[in-house]
Amino acid sequence: MSLIVILLVDLFILTNVFTGLDDISRWHLNPTQSHPCYSEWNSYQTKTTNRTDYDVIREAISSKTKDVDSYDPSGSSPRVDLSQKYKEDVKNKLGTISNVCFEYAGIRDKINTSENQASVASIDRQQADIGKLESANETIKSQYDSSLLDKIAGQKRDRSINQVGAEKAKQTLEQNNAKIITLKQKNTALENSLIAKQESNAFISLLKDSNKFNLLKSSYDRASFWYPSIQFGFQFVFLLPLLLGALVVNNFAQRRGYGLIALISWHLLVIFLIPLLFKVLEFLQIGVIFNLISSIVYKLFGSLLFLISYIYIFLVPLVGFGLIKVFQEFVFNSKIQTANRVQKSQCVNCARKIRSSDIYCPHCSYYQLSECQNCHHLTYKNLPYCNQCGHSQQQ
Image 1 (cartoon, rainbow, N blue to C red):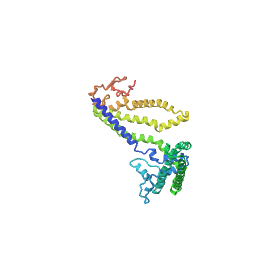
Image 2 (cartoon, rainbow, N blue to C red):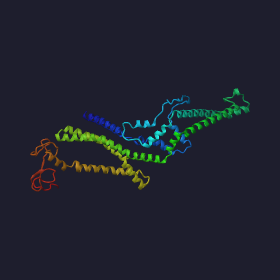
Image 3 (spheres, rainbow, N blue to C red):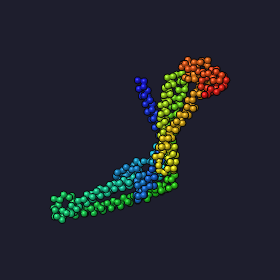
Image 4 (tube, rainbow, N blue to C red):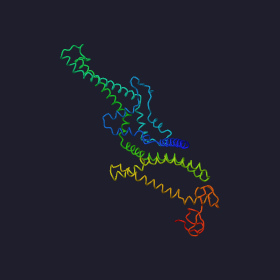
């Protein structure tokens, strides 16, 4: 039953620790949030179609009006202020949005007027009409050959399976094509008028400014490079109080001889180290170290980036064994622990408080002394020199 309770408690603690790590990792703006205009700007830079300018202006106009008749000349129709949206997105977060994106948003907001929204709604409505006419033409064309055969064969109109006769089909096609041409001309005129406006020209000029875009791109790339390190730093700050708290409680419990509390605190310390280990391994896969190793492998072996996996397979165990060696030499070294315990009048084995005259520990019955190899007097165990003659006790 105790094991089940411990397991449930560990699962609860780990769940909350990982939840906290995930929350704090989102505290700082990610590269997309700090450079919200980058994807749209980069998309414009890579497009080569003739409608690129209109498409980007169309995206900047956020009206969802379906009918031009709903246009409100008073300007009371709702609009989305991109600059304000950027400011709302950074509330309660660390980091700042790129100044270039704020400039982008300010110029783009000037396009999103009620008049331009009505123009886009009119273009969309007329484009829908064009689609209906083209669909009708396709239907008529599919039946035209059959209607022509009916005419040649002298088939009566009331006995034909086709909706219209050959003459009527041709006439309807001509009328629909004329309407399509007229609607397309109207749309082209509306699109050109949108592009020709002063605010649109200013927006297009900004998007074509290579210097501004290169400045934005370099800032975005730099943010992408450092973001995993920033995330890891915040996650480590989250775990640090938990680790220090468990360690302090453990040391206090050992000094006072509270065995159960010492065991629980040590167990919690191990539990808190598990998420830290996961985050360290995750950081090695996506952080600055990974980018550094990737660049070295790429320069030496070209595109054989799978070699990074071999490097990690050999590097991580070496680092792990190196950490074990460091802990053995400096943290859990028996001679260092013995020296500290003797200075504090503690048992050299269990670290509980004893009198300086005690040869055996009254708590664990451990014998505190050993015979000096030189003078054969009794001296403290595990200390490097005899406290009677000063001779080395290291074998």
